[in-house]
Length: 79
Image 1 (spheres, one colour):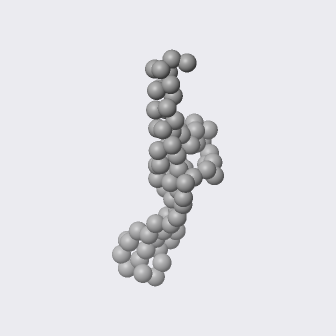
Image 2 (spheres, rainbow, N blue to C red):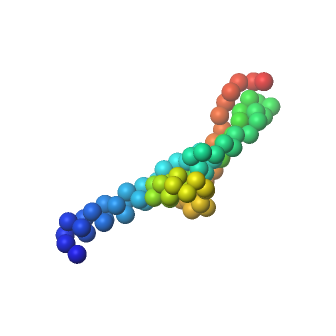
Image 3 (cartoon, rainbow, N blue to C red):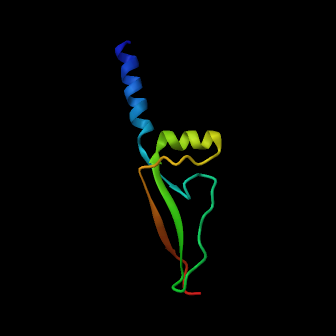
């Protein structure tokens, strides 16, 4: 394998592993909760590799491969 191809392969692998935050685990999903008593609603998120995000977008489904996940609070005001 030539030096140029090795460099391209290494760069492609590194780019595929860059962490990307995805709300609800997938680009086309919705998952917000209703507001609680203090005016917050919550969304689930996953931080996943860019390569997995591209594959999920192509096959239109969520793969359970991610670096970490959690819930994020959003304040909308007191109901």
